[in-house]
Length: 307
Image 1 (cartoon, rainbow, N blue to C red):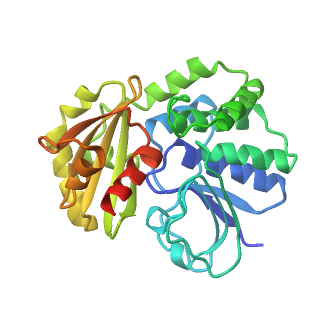
Image 2: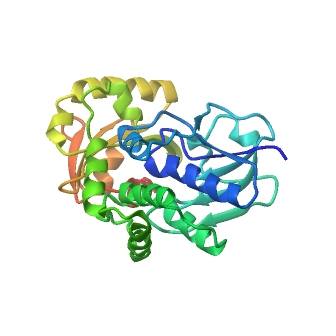
């Protein structure tokens, strides 16, 4: 049986990498020939998780061959996926995002639920298949949930995510608050990241209305510290706009302590941000109070404004 590759989206975050790892573990327990992969380097938050458990990260891949069997986690939009995905054989999708222009040649297993984290769905798959969750797997899934829900403060977090996290904590045997804060803070150390690194750390290319956009997000404990680098960030963003032929690039600099985001918006469609949030972009930037979720508070709001 040909090996099935499991991977999340480009510019992978913790949920994307961990989901590939823990779903691969489940599929292997069910007798499948699979391999967990990733589509980019680990960010510091994700590296903290794998270092904490002394685990090797999933295999880095750049493209897939035609007819390669694959399983997608934490995404379904082809621009966010691996190069060659249009010709791959998609066997399964496990995701918690919107479904956008997704098409396959063959029937497949598709599991999508409006939960705060893909790993919350994968937890349910372990339960449904009666596969034991080890301490290691519990810590991994718990880490992903903490990451995607910003320690349960994000509006994407549901009561079910909290319930699942509580059950995983019993297996993991760790203090969620203590571990979670340490993990999130590890991801806010941006001191050795270039401007190009920062705009690619967690970036997703999407269609908003009829134009192509990229929405990137950086977590920090101090928005002013990141905004000191606005000039170099804008140079990197302008280069990305030219390279990817984007009409809009939004960088959300999210304060994980106070739950606000400062956005830098560039491109010919930057005024969509003003329309969407009833703010004025001054020097290409505005503070969006209470906005922390790209999935729930940025992408759908911009899409609505574009229509």
